Image (cartoon, rainbow, N blue to C red; front, top):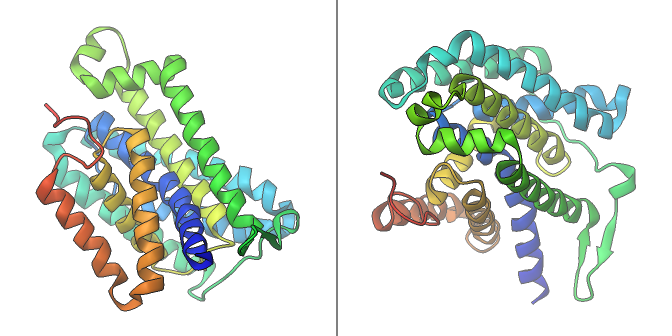
Length: 288
């Protein structure tokens, strides 16, 4: 029983990190039918910036500075390069452009930060373990689960109670109608893209004490985030969280029980969802 609890908590902490990466992918695709294959690079850049800044500004300072820096970078890339390729009819251009951007980011990070595997200890305030009665568990991982829940609730409030959220939901429902009502859909998409990149970098920062940072982690994280989005159905932040929990638990129990087949199990889950509910396991109805 204690092992099951530990596996479940590990899965939930990983699910929180996956959600931070996947929610930006989901909202950007739902809003502008824009498939961003460079999103994993923003996650890894956040982790590397954290490792570089932690000695000068501390972990909590890096938790603020790194996502903001990535948001500025993403806003510039979206404004100068990506915006002209938004739209479902430009899917091939999007994939080629963002895939190329992913490789550019990967090579730049390898050049600047090096290729060795780097790890970061949990911040002193959250170091150590806590006794849960039947097992001990790292305090930091529990904090990551709590942060994930806070982000989920914050995004839900923003989407439902703010002007930006109203514009995002309107543009996601029908961009042409939203534009006819005076909503600058290009700016809404750009803002959503930058915020999504910032959340991915935030995930990279809080994930650094859990997941060793190394080259290649960007593409591995991107694949898992895409699985989360496909399982959820693009465009729903709430469904993305449910999907992240499912994928996180699947990954945790798979690595513990069948480590050689854990990746296969994830892709089997993806295949079953695509066959049974191609529009998403947690989607209320098929799109369109």
